[in-house]
Length: 101
Image (cartoon, rainbow, N blue to C red; front, side, top):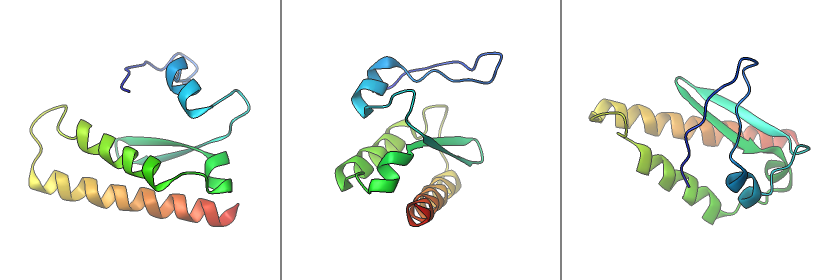
């Protein structure tokens, strides 16, 4: 699924209902927000705490990153390398969050 959304005056972002339903995200669901340069990743803390993120879900996320790569223009080899490094940092931070819970 792919959606475009805006930030309101309070800095809030609406996660489309279809995505919320698909991921079982409610008002009570805590989310980890991770920033890498111009990239923001949201991860359900419940999934991190319980370790319920499956390899399939993780692979879907990586596949999505591959799909949107270059969406805003031609991607250079250096940008691909940087994106891979960012992806690895995301994985590392998520692992650290899992250990804290």
